[in-house]
Length: 308
Image 1 (cartoon, rainbow, N blue to C red):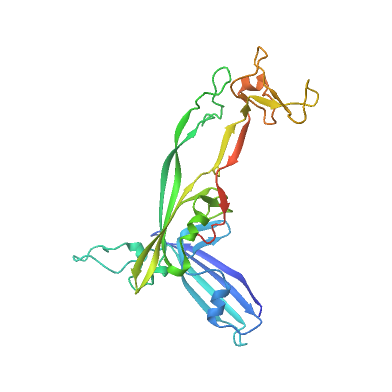
Image 2 (image 1 turned 120 degrees about the vertical axis):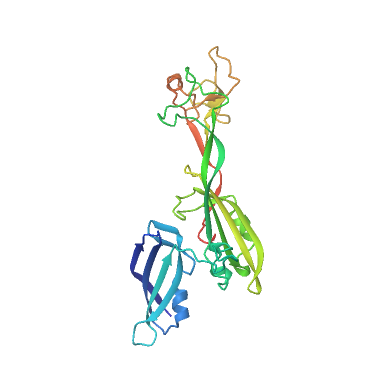
């Protein structure tokens, strides 16, 4: 059996209330007769997915409805599949005794809606941390003493990174504690939810059991911290030894290092700036504040395609 599909159209709209609606249509072709369920399963889009079209992403607009229609006269070889998305909040249908606003979480969906078919909730915020300030934020001038030396200890400043928390119901069989090791302390491999490659760090993956609709479900909480610098850390390239050259006196290929001398010719006792290639940084670069830094990634990366 061979199944192929391609998107043939999509549209977007928005009203004065801020409700955004999207629609996409796929044509599905098969060499054998298909059932509507098989057609639905052929395309990797399910109810609850966010709207994504190329670089356009709307995480709050979820797929609410899917329509599968047979369009050929050959008894199930050609189909159209239509997906409707919107960011409209589903009301729980319950009100307080005085008839005022709903008393339950409006994002929980209808009480009759199966938990894992309800849309996720999103919370956007910030978290405070500290970082080394190595350049003036407005002029980009390297921050050093007037003689060109870096400050020791370096200047530390507060920084505020964006965070996103996602909460969603999952069927017990669709998730498990094994995913904590898969995702926690990992960054996204590739663009995810509009965030650039390796900028979203998973800091929380929490699963809590909830009994509803006659069964247990996972109430899942995911938290991500965003770093525009892709979670890279830089450190000054410095040391008390430098790489020796073959023409240096006493050069030993088994130990190709030589002490860095101070102005009296004695080995330095504190790390001295290096040029990024294992050699002493020229004094002219030190005076100009042009230092070399070593940059490293702090976290492993993994695909976040199935994290929600």
